Length: 258
Length: 224
Image 1 (spheres, rainbow over the protein chains, first blue to last red):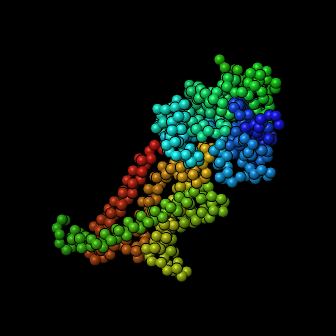
Image 2 (cartoon, rainbow over the protein chains, first blue to last red):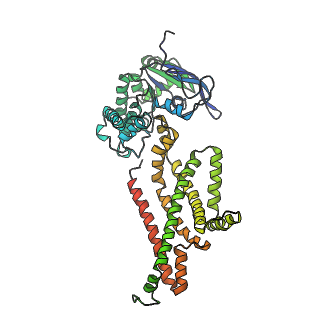
Image 3 (cartoon, rainbow over the protein chains, first blue to last red):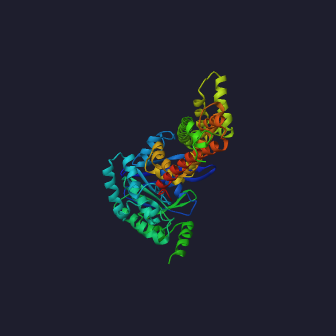
């Protein structure tokens, strides 16, 4: 194989909720350093796919590999791995949620250090140093001793990003991270994500922020009814959508743009 | 009223002081042991009810529903007379601890379950996402948040347990109520001594409520 081994490889991933198949065979390769944006209308399966990668959802068929390692299931058979193995794999994949999900009983700094100390086994001083560096990078150096309820939504989400990336995951999953924010707070979170993208972090971004996707993504995937309907570089995909569905989908956003 | 002669309340209370204080001590001991045991059972029971595999959930559900459905007095009589008939001979005090502790544990299990279930699912997901294992998620993320939610019902159950210890007078545990009744049997100052005993119970329970309020203030930052 001349191609370098992809950082993330999904092979024919199927997922059912009861009788409803929400992922109908997802195949995708993501190279190191890529920023892959996943777009599509709600119910198309993009969030579910992201959650499968971080093993928050089980899937019924197919395979996901991160850095060549099969995720969540034993090689050869589709048997779920044990708890410790799954936890170790999750620790190498960062995830940022739509609703932030900061731990409310911990300060911003403690939210970041928890995984560094308890999962990665770092000393407290070291973890604090790492946490402060990342909180500084997302512009919250002064807020490190604040509890989540003392922070705005945008600030909470930036802490959540710091919590995820401080563990130096191989890739970071962003699940509609600006959808729960007031419009005026969206840009501060997107700015942090753009900064991370520039630094070469591998990112999978489910987003409805089309201007962000266009500016930052190296590749865009359009999901439709549990399948990847179209993919390509953002400029191409946005300018010349091949399918009518994508054209219609993008049209709804153009209608909203100013 | 403040004269200190035989037949007055102050005099008779002084005469009976050791007996009454011993009764109060037994009540306090029973309460502390029962609430502590109930809380420990409650944490394990609540975690088991919320996250346990089906067989464990089923067994815990049977325990919780059965014990909560049976009057405490029946539990007490069973653990004293019933167990004796089965060849298990325990002191009235121990029987009381078993009955009240089991009762308290059932209530606390439900309280802990409710508290855990009221924590948003996103908390568990975020804890999973950073790679915490189940026991770590419980210890660092879920239980600290559950504590805040279960404090008010915990205080309620604690207060009920203190009052519940009076039922042990039936099987001959000389706690505060029985000690009071024994005192009254000697001096017939019925109103005064029942009133005094009532005040002592109120005092104990106010202490528990204050403890709960203190803990609530100390966890006041656990907001969303």
